[in-house]
Image: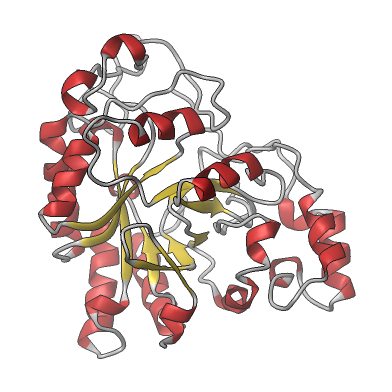
Length: 357
């Protein structure tokens, strides 16, 4: 068995996803040339999972880096697990495949291994990433959910008008008018091997899972994690299962982010362990992908600047000192059950991700 397969998780559609991934979202101050160099370095040090999105505005650089490493024989295309996301302005069914094809051209790839719905809401289609009206307010989009998810619009709230906040606890009425049918077509066309969601709460996930005529259920949900300039995905209960893979943490390119993927992409870290959401995903055979698992770079616009820095937590540092490791290397060996319980106790329901519309 290859090392990549050994440190991978099997998705519900049969494909395997490397447990450790490199996120490619970077602050505006980071030059695009550094992004390209970081991807090359990551592949050289055996990263095989790369996470991207068109909204990061660096797909061309990522594509060039991957092609360079394929050309010099470091990897083959099949060695790379590449994930991308559908941005909010492309949620209408007729735009989904077009959006993916545009990304593929920039990336110089014929397919992605994983295609995610980036957030559970839709914005007005167009060239602007965040379309706004003359008063500076975000313009949301309304999509016929009957023709997309094949459920009654009367039972499904959708985004309109006023400022809303993302939530994973099911308390808000955030819903995606995106077509899972359109995503399924991308999978069947061979443009995406697996499909999943990002930043969905339990109620939103259940909507897709209970959708009439669902052909492929999401393989994952990616959620936020937390610590400066890296991004991962595991609460302590998952870290213990995957602790060996954290050896790579020492050599992560500083411009980028670490990501652990369990295919429901959400914020998840020691201060926000998402234990209830994790258990729900496990019960549905959906992988929970945590981003910002070591925290998030405070230079990024969407990061809450008032939150404590996770890697400076005194409890985490005490455990690191005990094992003669840095806080980011705490997972580079086997922790005791007592250490794991202590780390799990750091949960404070703190979110670094502060993206609002």
